Length: 157
Image (cartoon, rainbow, N blue to C red; front, side):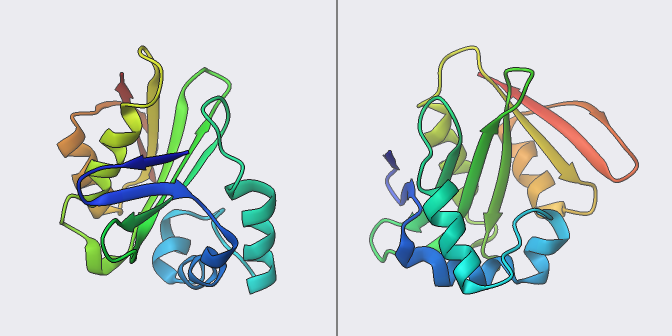
């Protein structure tokens, strides 16, 4: 599955993405907010792509690389998985050099157009993750609850 906007291409991961995935999942930015997105080695990144990230479909999980449509530069990734309540939980990452350019909002809205009506996207965000919190404000999400360390939002489609 590939989704395109005027600037972006959201596509499934490929083996060629392993080196980039390994490098970004080793960064402190990713560890700080996406604890489960850690790869210990390049081989593990390849394994994740082969066994998980390249198998998303419209019923199960979605693992998208977000790339610039013209230059093919990696902008980030978007991981969306269904939970037991029938919602889709969202994990998103944008490389720091692409912050505050509207790429993640554009990618999320493009994805939203592909999922069934009456779906719910759920965002669990670390209270210190100011970039993600600002992104969600622009999406007009509803805060439903939170904990000392996290805020939980939903976006109903």
